[in-house]
Image (cartoon, rainbow, N blue to C red; front, side, top):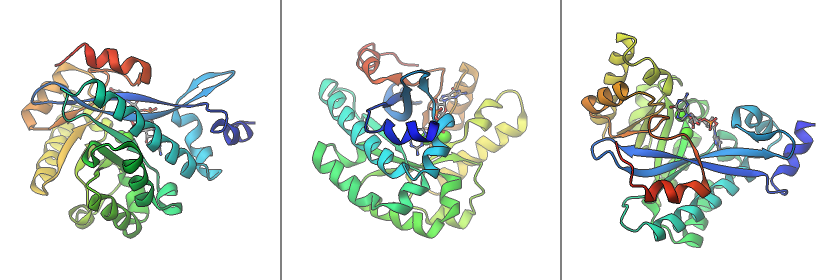
Length: 257
Ligand code: C2E
Ligand code: CA
Ligand code: CA
């Protein structure tokens, strides 16, 4: 039943994106959003990706869903940039899975979306998880290189959980490392987590990359991340993922941390 419904969900326009703010830790201001996929099921309500992403992948739907997400997120970003020209940069990050990268010409899609919306390429970020990268490092590297040559930024998601080899890390055309929330959650509770986060920040900086901490939930975690020189943070402390209709009010509030 889930399979049949999922196959129709795109045509029935049941997918939504929610947008979670990303905060620049130095200034404390919002600099962008991560677009997160939701499925508005007619009977069961809003479903998060853990419920349907695996099935959607098995059904080969991720290429079309990824295409839709990128178009939708870029279109929204264009509107918010026009509404809030004083907030600069204002970026949007879109998640891509390996099945999409493997099946479609992502670089061509990115180019198409940039042309259609007219957004400035660096205001778009593509996220791919470390474990997806490691499943097929050569193929992913070549796609990321094409994306980088279009001046679009790239993020290595869930970093620390996907067994990257350090030699790949050096070669990958990646602008940002996103430290997985499992490490941030343990900050403050456990000295090993602090050592790991500190080491990831230093490693990223040595390789010329910037760092985004995911899953920031407490002011103590925020303080630690600032002390460590982590550039960006994302998590419930700042905001949960917001429906698109709430983003303007959120930006207008000028909230900062
Ligand atoms: P992710 O890319 O690591 O996204 C972050 C997840 O952490 C989101 O879950 C977000 O709601 C949650 N989160 C954010 N801040 C906090 C916090 O402070 N504490 C806790 N406990 N959680 C927090 P979500 O939206 O359920 O997404 C789950 C995963 O599904 C994402 O993990 C991503 O890998 C995948 N995903 C989401 N949207 C898409 C998409 O459009 N395409 C693809 N391929 N994957 C997607
Ligand atoms: Ca992500
Ligand atoms: Ca992540």
